Amino acid sequence: MKNVLLTIEYDGTNFCGWQRQPGLRTVQGELERVFSILCAQSVQLNGTSRTDAGVHAYGQRASFRGDFGIPVDRMQMAANHLLAAPPKGKKSSFQGLQGDIRIKNVTEVPMDFHARFDAVGKKYIYKIQNRTIPDIFHRNYCYQIPKVLDLESMKEAASYMTGTHDFKCFQAAGGKEMESTVRTIYQIRLYQRMLPEDSGEFSPSEISIEVVGDGFLYNMVRIITGTLVDVGTGKLSPENISGILAGKNRQLAGHTAPPQGLYLAEVYYNEAKRSQR
Amino acid sequence: MKNVLLTIEYDGTNFCGWQRQPGLRTVQGELERVFSILCAQSVQLNGTSRTDAGVHAYGQRASFRGDFGIPVDRMQMAANHLLAAPPKGKKSSFQGLQGDIRIKNVTEVPMDFHARFDAVGKKYIYKIQNRTIPDIFHRNYCYQIPKVLDLESMKEAASYMTGTHDFKCFQAAGGKEMESTVRTIYQIRLYQRMLPEDSGEFSPSEISIEVVGDGFLYNMVRIITGTLVDVGTGKLSPENISGILAGKNRQLAGHTAPPQGLYLAEVYYNEAKRSQR
Image 1 (cartoon, one colour):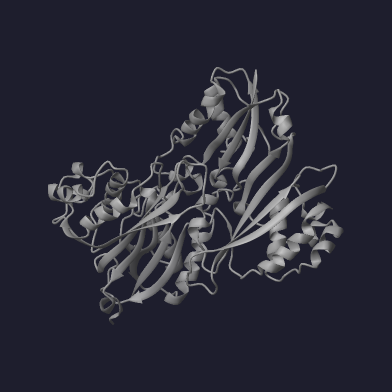
Image 2: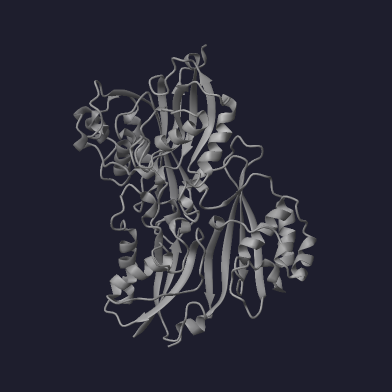
């Protein structure tokens, strides 16, 4: 019996999210199909985060256990080979479905290790393109905002969100009822990169928001982003943030930014726990 | 009666090419659907270039004639509104199908103007990512080559292709039998942009190949690119190019680069002709 931990990158565009659902193409479903072939047995994955439809990952994690013949150090190449092949019955001219998941790492872990329960933190990145003229080639990979954003105000607002707070105001309905809505955000970093000039009203740029925390409520990063955008456009001011947090009411916070700008970037584990034997 | 010229940008990923085909999603089919609604009559487009499945455009052109009520200066916004709406019966979670065509310009032209026959030249851009670790987020937008490319040799090879030549060696089977395979390439420009470091064996970069000419044979830019890549990896040398051209045999040239790296960037017209009344 072995326990195996995967590090996974995916383009969420053509998936109905992470979680397995009958008849729908999901990341978990696609990975379980491929690893069941490789391991010659039914494989069930424990993923760290149930990302929504359209959300991407640079470093999702998932673990699974089993007795299988294939050596762990052969799994990465074999899985990537199967993941890049066009699905049966799909026209090969339909480029969008091929190779949109890549296994970045496969490693053996102690039997009692669990990809979700043992995570001690995560990093998400949210990508915004601030531009007047839409860029259709990035429509599935960022949130495009045609009004100029005030980055300094957004940074100030983000500083009020950092730390340990009750984040009930940033929790969407439809999530699980949590025992506690207190979480710690270790860092929110905003940075801007200028994009090639176009014929729009201002110089286009990409603004990335990196959020590192010990855990996240349902849609929390997307609501944090929407709130920061509302500050950037002047709809809210940085001074409103403390009141929004204290109010513990979703209605006080900003809008929910769309899924396609969100990337699950990294999952953190206690290294001692992950490698103990 | 009016004659209207469109400038069109599209992400070719989810299209079976430009040309209308029953039961398949094509760029021409999608545009004819939308403009038939706007003009309240059956619209048939004359496109400049029949791009293949997976090929993109920054500046495709197409013209159509008709007697219609909608003012020409309202067409762009109205068409982009319809093009961005999710197609009927498609799940909205399937992001990939929404807004992958954008009308960049609509202008009235003289009645005898034709988007294809009056074109005097075109610019294509072919994008390569030269990297060891594949980037799944760009898999539909460039050709990813994991062996380091010698850019200087590629530039030298390109210089032998520039000018007026019989380009029969760069014509794929399956195209129309042309009366002449002589064309003029005005310019081939190669430029490199470094990409963020990864854990690969060399620093990743993007190499763009811009080709401007008076006309192009079937798959010509993709075969030019494949030949330049074969020079970049050392399979061919720049000195081979003159012999390849003189041989007029497709078998002598390099491989055909895949469609997803190709962008129809610009179409050139004789401005006097385009604006005469």
